[in-house]
Length: 302
Ligand code: SF4
Image (cartoon, rainbow, N blue to C red; front, top):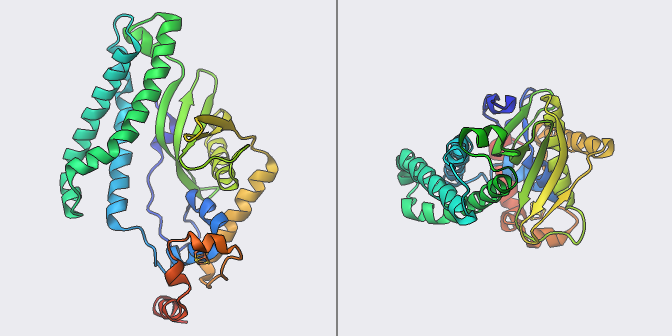
């Protein structure tokens, strides 16, 4: 059965904001970091993502899309009780084929940005192995408990996993790609997967906003989601987030503040937290007043 939200049309987001555009959920986290950075990045386009990163991201999404679609074939190929390593190998073989196929289909795009096809494969491989491992563990545990195989195994498999799920709500003016959705017969669970340092307890504020935004979009889409988690790979823990009305209000306020930045096109002040500036990729340009003034004049005529 198809997920309703797989069918959501992809819409090009223009940072010259107009009223019926949608905001990428990732901008909510960016706003938590620094409002000025959003302006420099999205309005002045000082840090527009390099073309090669955009292309690699598109290819990565295609890989996960095929991994979702090929899951049934992998599962139905299990005809008798396998060992864990046999299941893992099946997934790794299938996912490696998918990665090779997508790279081959997009060969010209990669050549155009001077990316080596082999390097792209090697760099993508750890991410793919993580996906294979996650799915293999789920399938192995299910087979061990239920001892069903082939088509029956696919029909009964619970949960079913979907990665990089595109969602969008015109009403909320928000869109994004959820890292992982687990589908059970009566509910769905939603996961965002994060690298980097985990907080001692709970989840980082920017991750709260992101997950709450996805919760709101899923509700808008009529999806029955019963749990929201951030998985911190560093500590190998999934931490649940309770999405309440206060958090939802913060999402909407942050979204509106971002729209305000994009629409008003006025340069926000520097952040007060200079530690953020020290780790900011735009620091040099941001603090170069002449450069910023020139950019503002060139793009906005003021
Ligand atoms: S250098 Fe500081 S003020 Fe400027 S964009 Fe980066 S974080 Fe914001």
